Amino acid sequence: MSSTAVPAATQDATATMRDRLPAQALLEQVLLRQAVGRPRTRLERLLGRDPVEPEARSWYTNATAERAVAARLATLPPGWSVLHSLPVGRSGADIDHLIVGPGGIFTVNTKHHIDASVWVAGRTVLVNGSSRPIVQKAEAEARRVDRVVAGVLADPPAARPIIAVVGAKRVAVRRAPRFVTVLRAEHLRRFLRSQPQRLTPIEVARVARRFEDPATWQPTVEAGPELLLAFSRLSREVRAAARIRAAWAVGLLGTTAAASTAIVLPGLLSLLSS
Image (cartoon, rainbow, N blue to C red; front, top):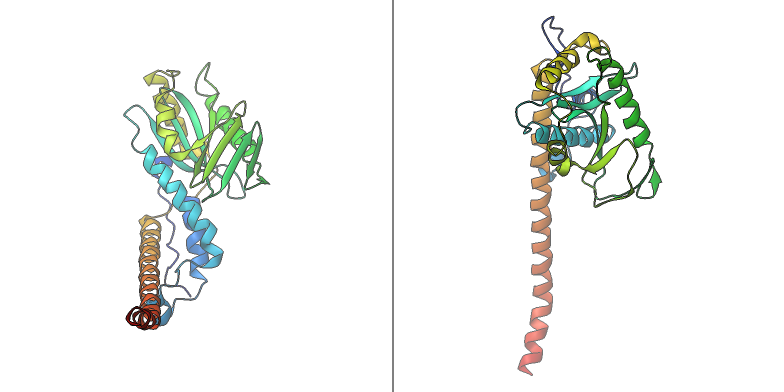
């Protein structure tokens, strides 16, 4: 069994959805898969073997991306409210980030496509040439939120879905989807702040209270602080392993270069002296 234990969940009657961790659903999946893996041997640690189990790798990278987007959203000015990992489906589906502020209501679907080419034309999205139904998913999330807000405000603005792309080499929006905004994650904060005012401070507060109410969403058991501690520990191990692999690579390159010099240099000196 892996050294990364699955933390016990807790149920707090006073908890609100504001207590949800960024990428919480993904963190839980990462640690569940880590728990059934085998620990690294001493030699594997020495060589810098990646501590993330293969079955957990995609969950881990997506969780890292969601948490990076959450960190950007945390710098929004006062007057904005941001919630994360809101459970909306019986199969574990969630809304990555839900935002309400002066500029309106926004759902954010984070997509991690490292070094990929993302091409968008209307509701068609190609990632390295492969079609992905992410616009349709983003639209469905916004419709869910619209049904929630309909019971709070008399004339609410429609929730606006956003797809935030992390790590892509290229994002080409040839024709923007009608209802969905596709952008790089690093442009998200600027996009939100550029929006004209659609909600008053009182309306923002009313909508935020409904979003924070656990009864608004699918029932869930809240995770204790152990979840974040376990994931943070795993992330430190990942970074340490990467540094070790880099050091080995530099050492091997240096050894190869020294060996080549030892072979070539005598020949060159012989030619120069002849």
